[in-house]
Length: 100
Image (tube, rainbow, N blue to C red; front, top):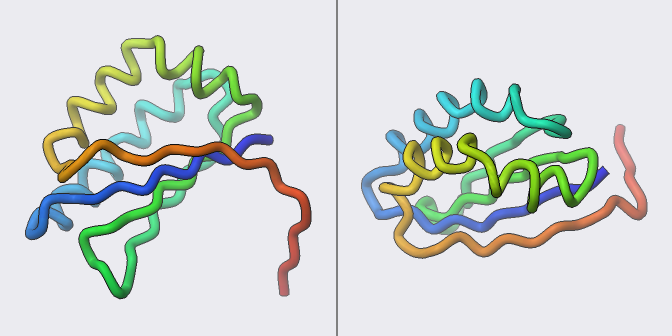
């Protein structure tokens, strides 16, 4: 399992609209090959900064299957207008997990 972590800076004042657009995008992600889950986190200290965590079965599901699809174009059309700058994206693999 791969976690895509995108740090996204949003134009100040557009936070509510951005959050609504991300919620609308769940229909896009649900039809993507290898997509498993999505979480949007908002910074407490910097309210215009978000981290989007998306779980993919494989790295290729994100960088090839999704990024080269019309779903990616649709996603960017939906949320792109709110970006203050290009998102910073990296991928991780879980090494250890703890929970209550």
